[in-house]
Image 1 (tube, helix red, strand yellow):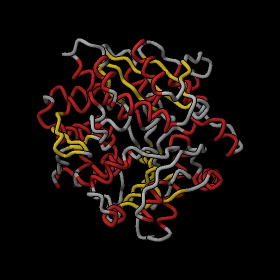
Image 2 (cartoon, helix red, strand yellow; image 1 turned 90 degrees about the vertical axis):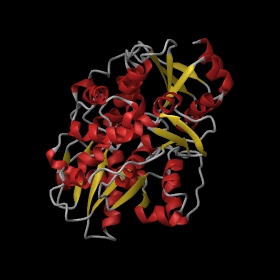
Image 3 (cartoon, rainbow, N blue to C red; image 1 turned 60 degrees about the vertical axis):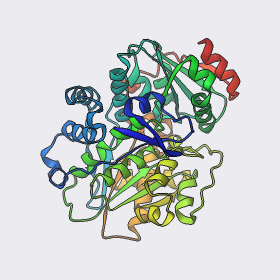
Length: 432
């Protein structure tokens, strides 16, 4: 497998180099030199394959000869160990539950696959690998769980102070061991900027082996494409066009869906669903992209004002606005609309959505009002219990908390305070 930088298509590297670098030196993002096409026979007979078999087939088509099949099979078996069930509310509205992994968020798929892949490639290295990851909520917990006690790898998680939920914070700050949490006095965009600057600082990269576990790393996107196939597989009536509504922050999840479509999965259309941090929906409406500081919302994992993976989306469509908006529609919603929808879904279907999934539901509903002869799959990206206080206040009743989440509540938070000054962060990294 070979990959190029979105800023320079002649800058071609191997999968191993792309995974360990995370970010090219030219500040682009790595993209596969080729998006493989899967056979029509495979696509038409998805029901005959288990989730792990689907994941292996998709991964193999990407990595080609970069990893022996037996080793790739082992990576899949160790990382894809939980289901992604499809729950149908009615004939038009389906929910793909992506929260059945260890951190109860969709990012478990990418984080666990990446941890196994990096561990595989890292066996031949003598110097410790340092993983830097910025999180607006769920990424941190998933990465912490996925990489916990992985030999030869230390993990540093940067998160915005006071801007993640209580249980999200506990997930990324209580493990200890090889996982260090930095509580940054700023926004998610500030956290992400620190990580990006670190990769572009030659002084740092000459001293440390740095890599990223954010969705800027291609190793996150490959496994996130797996569950689009798994979700489509579970749809009963495939004669009706299928739309995927994707709650979006950094837009890695939607980009992975675009990969799946280009591989042959017959997805009719995508919906980019956001909260008021709507720079991508605005672009889809106007053709103009204007990043801006993020605004704090109820659906905090989507509080991103300058989404990294937008560059990959542009690259997939050769920066042609008309082609992008033919495949993707954008919608954004307020916290007030999100709360109302959470209550309506609970009353109408006896189903509890988290705030992010509710934004996805709202976007699908808005789109189906324009194109009713379709059905949609909403990606439910996190368990509602991760936002226990908000969800219970909105619904006016207590919700059940999974034991592995409830057990975190009494654990002691372990963090280090960090400013948004890059020189301070750089010096800390070198001394750590």
